[in-house]
Length: 322
Length: 173
Image 1 (cartoon, chains in turn yellow, orange):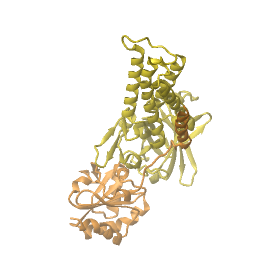
Image 2: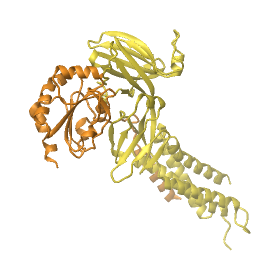
Image 3: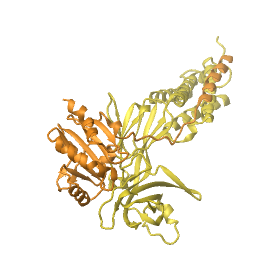
Image 4: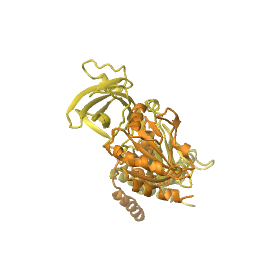
């Protein structure tokens, strides 16, 4: 019996390891050799037990349990294959209103346009368009499986910037160091380490005023820890520094989301929120998971209820044929 | 049992083949040239004369759309050639300028000073700049009669280059 329980536990662990790929796709664990090794060992144990049980070495109950082991093996093989053949985990960051080809999916990702209010609400979306296929609209919380890939959205910090000169005239925002040169939406592709914390960092410019600005994104929780009584009313905020074209520093300020601040002679209004990135992770095929888990459950139930009129399920050597 | 050891070995072998991914992989960009053949995106914005306009309103015509800003020296240098091109090709090619991110009054003053007669759209939210993947200013986008991007060009153009840029679009039916 103990061998059977151990085999069942390992089969369950196999299924759990593979299901975790779907439930927590961003965890780096699945792409380590240790994960693959653990899955392969579990799979080997499951198959060895299934073969022994099939030959009656674990009694009639064990024979029925072989079906459950087969189901676990299907799940395990699907998980191992998705890791080996599926695409690497990737996060595609695109500026609102732009299109980015995604060769791994055979599709183009259309990053939805966003205004300050939709960015603050975190309601931006991405559409995937494939040749000869329907458009797939991805919103917050939606996930879809395309081929061997699990596709979903990852919300990232973002800021919509408006800037004005001393006369109140709107200024062009550029991002000279980013692919989205003319976007007023900062996507914070970089980070800055401050002590033990890592803070999203981005830069933008107002070329009409010859200003280069660096912005660090602080969450409301981080801002609450600021000393000197930073008043942000529980909002996220940017710490902004400004330099002129020659690199001379012109000041530093805290810009809470939705409030105007003046720095380096320009008025900056930052609306903070989130904007999605397209995340792609290897995923075992759904049909294999459903089939495998169904077989597993069927086998477990069948072996536990036993056959009417037959001897109770016991462990040990198979009864000899008479 | 030995054959299961072989199976186990076969299962373990691929584990060594696992390669580490780059979880921070990102993509994007490609510049305006990458949009050739794509449907031209359009947004309703104000013009310097206060009317609402958009690229989509010129569907059925060959359009040369120039993204620019008053603070951009190459845009300033290109503007006389653009104005001349617009006058010489009136009726064949529609030229529109799309100011990026600035106030209407600033764009209107510049247009007046430089004698610009073609429509200037004021794209304060820089929607056209984003949609056409501008990697700098000026950026020129040629849109065919069918509403698709024929060419996307980064940087200032001479008069001859403007003629060359629209040749393909004019040849299309």
